[in-house]
Image (cartoon, rainbow, N blue to C red; front, side, top):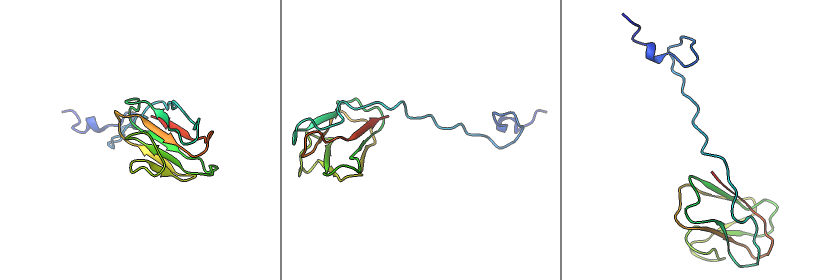
Length: 119
């Protein structure tokens, strides 16, 4: 009779009856945004095009920033909009599911740099 626990032997061949779970795969290779700085003051830029985020994206207003960065996943980002999320210096925003809309950002100063990565 064969060993009924043979299916539990781990992949390293140590004979342990404790199964070993493989590490989960990484979500993918990070890709950059379409824009990583505000070109013109108070004019939104498209960070990610519609349907370009496969799984997750992170947008970060650097801690060295001197003003908020507004991010919007519904329409063009504007300061004070009901759908625009203000990111204070050092704060981040995560898009945790694929979107069929573009992701935009705006700030009050031209040249305002930020970090955006999708996975």
